[in-house]
Length: 314
Length: 267
Image 1 (cartoon, rainbow over the protein chains, first blue to last red):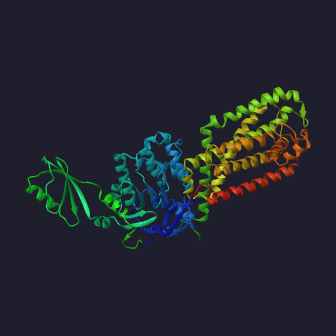
Image 2: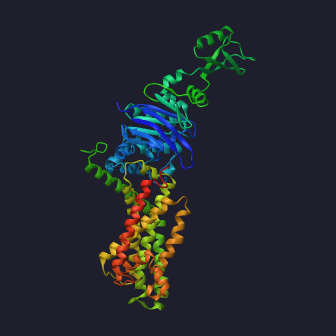
Image 3: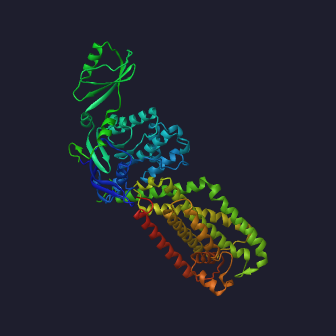
């Protein structure tokens, strides 16, 4: 099957001499839910900008469903929906007009554009506001309006650049459900986000960019398996003054009721519970100290470039 | 058969027309939504010109080119309103969209550059014509009805508003902040309009000033429009029409080139 996106040796140097991309290559398969992660300024938005033709590349090639974005401008744009990082619609226009107008740019007759606008505004919980100016929407609603606008022409590939930044948890979760649903219905999704929990929950494959280079490109499952250490926070019923010694496990006393236990790869959590039980310590609750992907993200982006890849992707 | 994302050439043309129509509707809706800012001020300005220059001062000036002073300045004032508003519409709309990045809505969509340009220019022409029409109606209160050549009148008003819409577009592309979109109208456009023969015939000027006026494109527009309305002009109508057509072609080509290169729009 032709990949949804094929990027080869993509370079971008801005007019001020800043090298944003240093020869990245990437494949995103059709139907995938793909995470593109990296620190601020790593090159994510530049990559998205080049795919969307908003940024001109210095060298390399980009294909959308097998068609070059330079030579098949019309076809590639037709297949592409982009949700930008910044709110970029007129705040003085009505919500419905913003979506219908975008449909018009894609050649949708007014009747169809209105039907589609209603469909997506309803699905994203914005229909009640459809006749109001966009400026009255909350921050989360404005982000959802960007998604509705990007979907009005029903693209095969949807690129979301930090779609849930600054959105409260309830809206964020309902946005995740919506995105999962359209992905299941066949839309390929590329997501950049700073919420690594979001990427871990939604995405099947992942690439990490650092200083304009791909440092990781693999499946989420395989990446998480490379995690060497996990930290768990245990709330106990006991009052402790020092951290108990639990054989090879690293244990830290956070407060008189709380322990932080580190598990290396291969160590068993049951053993921790057994050792605590032997010491008459009862565990009330347990949680991961930080998101697993977050730990990997921090470790991978703070060491010299070492590309982790699997499969056809490079 | 060549297809465009599953669309035939005929279908594509119809989709492109819808895109054009969408830009025009959006532009017209914009200036109608803010009619207090876009339609009312030029109407008040024009009415004041008629009252002060035409009625109060004009009655002391006497006849010009065989017409009363009021009748003489009506075509120039209408043309001034048309070109000012055509320019203002495109420069403010395009720059605002560039500034708040909503122009990206258009740039990511499969809309050809010439359609984007035609859409904005049509919006500018629509506002120019709207204001021109209102100014014409107001002029009827102060002056009689004249129409020497309706064909030339329509062509000149259309070409004039197209040229100044394109001027507004070029200004918006190069502008980096809101100051940049007021510099050209204030320091270039206004002097050119006032020195372009709106209020006088160049025959009344000394020879040097008369020669300098020949380099002012607005001089040709005002005179061609006056010819269409009153049948009098300080310059040959053929020359005016040729220059207007040439200016339209040159500015359209230049504007299109700006869009293709992505100047000020794409990184």
